[in-house]
Image (tube, helix red, strand yellow):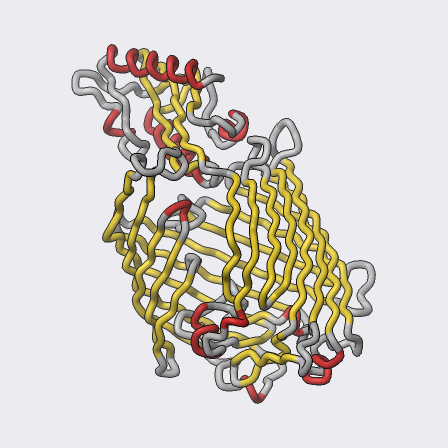
Length: 486
């Protein structure tokens, strides 16, 4: 449908709505009151006659219609219908294809409506420079690694987030610096007519000249060879099948292969790095994951819930080098107390079935995404971990800056900025079955962290967090992060 035809449809619907004296809501947040005309009662039920979409210059209409929980020629209770379109607006936005989404029901008869969906597309081809730290977080690099700029990664990343207008994603990254890496990913969310089945593939290669070989005193220990030889090479490839039966439930099955080579010099420093007496580790892995996701915004949620269960078998068919099972559970709940106040709480649990793992599979508090605020400088490694995170947030600034006079492109001419003040409390526990003496200070002990922070959410849902946190060992520090905590 051309832009001219879409505009004619929109003007016609607007005129019809005004002529009937029923008005048009500005957003779904206002829809239940804006559609209540002064001299008429809202209908008890409505039938949708047509669905019109404008603004989707690139995105196929079917991708948007897939997210709708209503259809044409069917009667809905009015209040239920309003709840449906509010939920659908969030689902369409969480496709991450649009900077704004608005669903407007227009009453055209006693029990009839036309639905107008207005979207504003993002810029889908995004070249960007890679300039990030090789360490776990900014505080680790700033304090433990002495602000060493040799530990910086740099390169180029090219992403196409809507290749053929069907939400396919193609990503390429070439990286130099501390970790030399090549990463290629392609995902197609729907390969069938009913839009339930999808496929994705990924190829990754990287090598390091400096390597974390163990932890002591709950901090990572790095090793660099005398002549700066490469210490690790890693090659991995995977294919993933996706099944989305309902709007909020996703099933993933991933089959992959991993090959890791370690320089014998590194094994001299840490003989148990691989555990099987060789400097190579090769294995197939099979992962099943279920995700229930009803968050209002997947980048920075303020309402809804997230439940993720994942089970991975390392070593499939051939288990001589590795035979391990890992299970992970994440359960987050987001409470919208009002337009400005929110409370978020989330529980994460991770289990390995074996008593010890190759160091490439080591997990614990301090490794993304499992952390306790106040312990960003530490790693607490083990076979079982439990983390409970909590944040109470107050949105004290919310404004969208219009720069259309300077930047004429629709995808970039509005810069939204929101600031939240957060009060945080995290606590957790890591079970280390091996009771390593050098890490006994924090392992197998109750850990707690708390503090205040300021979160900034801006362009394309980017997040910056500034926090000052204390932990139950009595130390406090300032921490800076680029992602939402959960």
